[in-house]
Length: 122
Image (tube, rainbow, N blue to C red):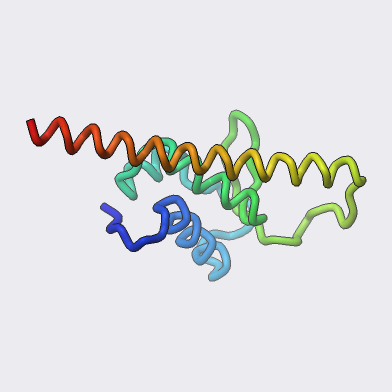
């Protein structure tokens, strides 16, 4: 189980995976753990596992393929050098939406924990 360090758990998981990719323990193109595997390994909810993978994609450390999973990448490698202004606007907007969703997921996790604590206390 991951201990609370003041850092959101999804960031801790993402940082662990980034460190593994940077060190060469997980090579670019190699399949990353699935949400289910991360849930089991870190004893976290699906939401937290999903956020960790999403953070890796945002930071350039993962490329996801629907139906196949997520694969390790290094930021700046194998990426187009320039995008259209429209693409940049959409990307920026999606990043903001992801941040909002992450905040909502964190609140949901907190509420779930409060409900669990309340249920155990009765």
